[in-house]
Length: 328
Image (tube, rainbow, N blue to C red; front, side, top):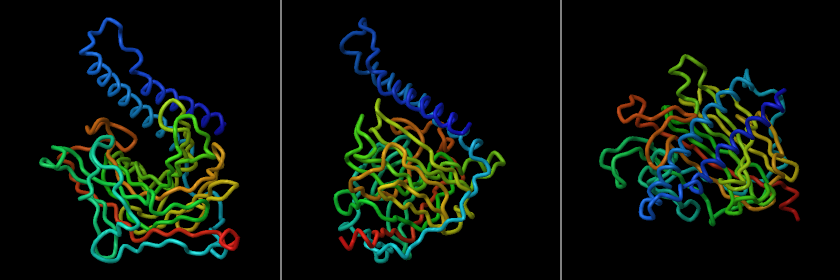
């Protein structure tokens, strides 16, 4: 039954993304040449909003299907087979630019990524999310992402971060791995987005529901017509908005194994396991389209919200490699 639900969910999501990506091809021939571009942009925004709604609908269904969300396995990560090869404790005064970069800046979904929103404080990385009436890109919601793209990349191993999640509606934080090889139509073996965790469910608390939940997901094939998606697990976490928890993934030739506080929460080899180096990312983003907030799987952000500003606080990021691979 669950397999059938997952198939339907994947098909609906792929169809939604396909519609959003291909909307530009349905511009009426009668449109004047000088208005076609504006019409296309409007259609893209409309369909992107439709995708946002569909993602929310699908994810609400997944939360129900995966009840009661607790890890089903008693297995824990075996650290004896790994050697630590990367570590950032975020000590010091500034982010280490030899390791991290603010690769993408500007519009991101319903807000903006701005490097001023990421900084170090008391031995932790802080990504601050807030509404700014006078931000550098104009009035809007500001946050950031940092990543090790082109500075530190690794194939296989165990990757972990220890953090506190931002307690606000309309946004989510993530620890994830990605590759520049993730392009339209390419198989998962050539690069897969590995979402160790994403945290879009804080808004459920406003509805009187359990919101101490994170999701772990896989994406490959680019982000247009060839996009493929799989939700591996939705997991209950111990007070993630006030306490530090660890989130990790073990990646090897057989698949991906996800962990919360060292305990397995799910595993998958969806799409064929990535065989290429991938970089690590820490990010927060607001739900929406074209820099404007819009309802999605994390609710919707509002300028006067009492839960903003909110902070994604990261104690450390670590990467380990298998001992046998290091010995080769």
